[in-house]
Image 1 (tube, one colour):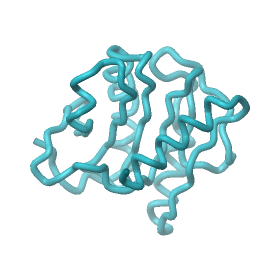
Image 2 (image 1 turned 30 degrees about the horizontal axis):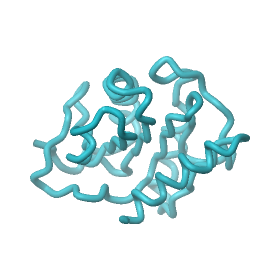
Image 3 (image 1 turned 90 degrees about the horizontal axis):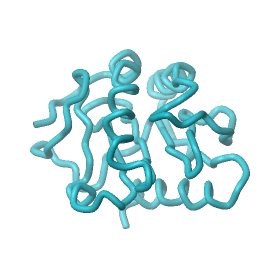
Image 4 (image 1 turned 120 degrees about the vertical axis):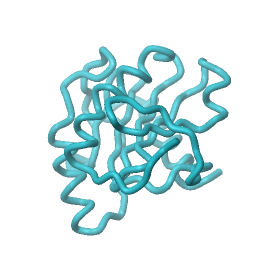
Amino acid sequence: MPAAAAAGLGVVLLAGCGGPVQIDVPDLDADDAAACAAFADDLPATLAEQERVESEPADAPGAAYGDPPIVVTCGVGEPPGFTAGSQCELVNDVGWYIPDEQYEDDSLDLTIYSAANRPRVEVLVPGEYRPNAAAAVMAALAPLVTEHTEQVSDCV
C-alpha cells in the first residue's frame, strides 16, 4: 500500500476509536509549512454539512469534520497512481484528483487531492457521505487552495 494511502487510512482508523481525530503532520520545508499553516487557519467551521471536530496535534496543517470524520490535510505527498496524464475534476478552477478505483463504488471511502498544486491538499471522505460530499468539499476548499497553494501543473 503506498505511504500516502496508508497514512490516510491511519487517520480514519484512529478517528473511529473516539477522542480527537489524529492528523498526520507531514515533513514540510519552511515555505510549504507557512502555506499549510495559513490554509489550516482559514478552514471553515463546517464542511459538507459536517461540523468541525477536535483534532490533534493542535498545530496540524488541517482539520476534521463530522463523525466519521472528513479529514483535510495540507502538505501531503504525491497521490498514488497520479501521473501527468491523470484525469482530474475541475471545480472552481482547481484540479482535484480522485484515484480511478474510487469512482467505481460509491460506498468506498474517497480520497481527493489537489494534485496539481504545491503544497498538495488531501481530503479523506468516508463512503457514507458519498456522493454529495465530494462536490461540496471540492467547491468549499477550492478558494483556499487557490489562495494558499501554487498551481504547478495542469490536470486533464
